Length: 100
Image 1 (cartoon, rainbow, N blue to C red):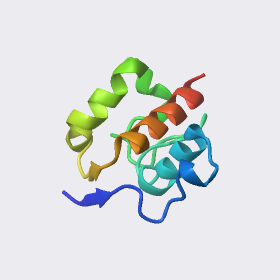
Image 2 (image 1 turned 45 degrees about the vertical axis):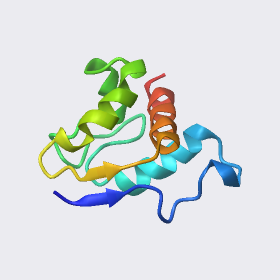
Image 3 (image 1 turned 120 degrees about the vertical axis):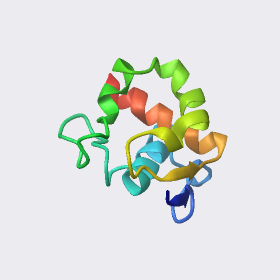
């Protein structure tokens, strides 16, 4: 597995972005290579579910625990993420936004 440290090179909420915007930036940088992160389109990796469908597998309020406990057990080739609670929360805020 490849270890990825989320947050390097991405402007955070401290610089004026709201949480969902920050989550979108993180998802674009670290997740979009496999997952469809927008409101339409297919994932580049067929085993990586589009973000907008994650609620079919997990309740949105359980995603934080899922990310913390099993982000490294997703689809084959999925990198191991070491994200801060703020970063995980921002990604979840973005996922909730695209699921609306």
